[in-house]
Image (cartoon, rainbow, N blue to C red; front, side, top):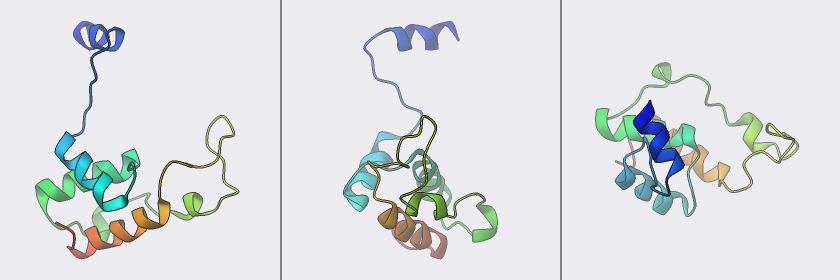
Length: 98
């Protein structure tokens, strides 16, 4: 934990996601991915096709409704392309986009 905190206190960038997968997603979505989709995509790229029975909590209902607010009452992910994420999500579950 001490080493992790040293990185946080420095100007060094850190990430738990593989940067190549992150840039693939940016290209596929024409914008930054959400952390949830990033995690699913990383698992998909490593493991292969995901089954809908393996994935929980990705309904995109709240994100697609512009009235939904996040913590702090900010709009739900204004920097993400939710419709594109939903399309890619369905593609990942059907085995496409690899």
